[in-house]
Length: 246
Image (tube, rainbow, N blue to C red; front, side, top):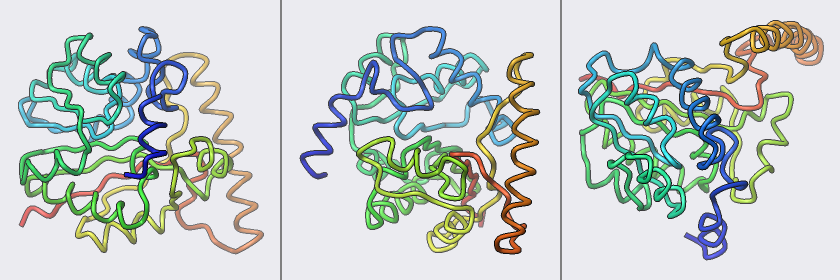
């Protein structure tokens, strides 16, 4: 890793924590972020609560804590930020490792039923991206899944997300996600918007408003390019990819 990136990652913590999982010392935001992530992707979680799960770039562990609250027992995380790893361990998450993700993955071949990588892949160069996806593929058990969230270059605020963190190297579209999955051997099960999740009155209003805006964006896309495929316009997109069972 380049020295400047090491310096930036060392500063992660508090106000510099990523957009998805909030501040490590904000209990309300910590719980909310993990809860929303499990709600958003619950249909893709292993039915077996004892199946091993790894969260790559786990931060302080809000997603892992949410999984633990749902009864999952074999939870692991790996992150490069000492402050975030310490914060997670202070919350009682004993399975968090301070290490480069690719090193951890290469030590655990065919182990995991699920690997998550929320806002991680965009930090890689193209060479690093394919190396990391190859390592994730090898670390998944046959039939295992990868769930990832990445900046959406097709999104209304895609440029904002792409350049919001100085360590971001890449942005994606639904098409490029399908492309990298095919090249690395994954079956791309689903590409999803990463927009509002209904969990109350305010979020329901946000969701409804977003549907109106989304319709207008699709109309503009059809008018400009005649393209109605994969109408995913949120600033991030999520995707679920599966390692073939055979």
